[in-house]
Length: 222
Image (cartoon, rainbow, N blue to C red):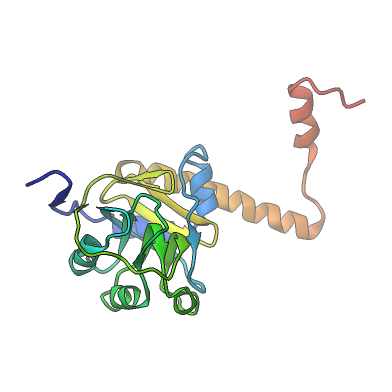
């Protein structure tokens, strides 16, 4: 099995109950509870809709989508196909046809560290697509590439089987071993933020912490 052109076995899928809990959380709350160091700079290109699922990873030669086609055939319903295409924007990795087929097969979304095309059609739909950019130029179909390997997308490392979530703020991935801890902490933060929103509406939001933080850091408040 040549390194660089291979298909590895799929890892166990993420726990369905954890995925449902993750679906209820803003990506920002999840990111905050991973020390704000996890996440991508890839942009959502679809009209609306949250994305949650198990990472099905692909590494491909920039501008080539042969193994991405294979990934769509292999991935299970509810998987998120995460493609490391090197961030290259010269050729599109997917477009309307591939996104439509992935949606028809029950794929939960696609994350492309590279370009896509047919952006008008993608932006009119609710199938989640995140990408680094847009171009009209089509892809090659020669390979090489790998499926179910560790990838890097938009500066974020993703392992096969990670829990992946996306919303209008971007995409975050959580290793399965850390998912319970991260999600539980994000749920606590989310409840606190909801309480703060109610306090803002009531005009009772406690802001004393601002001056306390400034004093603790040696600021002279005058």
